[in-house]
Image (spheres, rainbow, N blue to C red):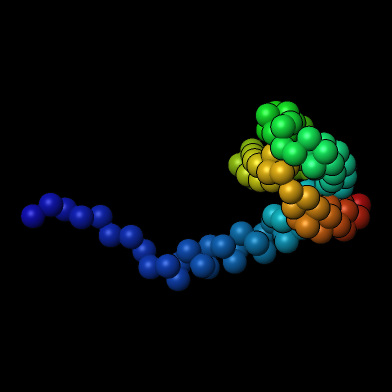
Length: 125
């Protein structure tokens, strides 16, 4: 019989997640820099207006703009917000993906995340 590796129970992972949240803070984990939130909102509103007017013909432009926004968000989160590489990449991918979808969906996420980021920045100073 093969030697099967055993994994710890899920309860240990839950404790790790709780510890990570406590050590880094809610604002650092879920917040985005307010400038990134504003840029996401503006770009998404401009793209959504164009997609409505052209009935989706500019979808490739929207995908490209989402990719550029993701890159800007990654760099800004690393430099201005102090995120590590993984956190910044996850946040950037989420923002870029949601911006490329032809709906005004990022406003639902970027405004509250920007407010959390603004509060986190105030608390650090």
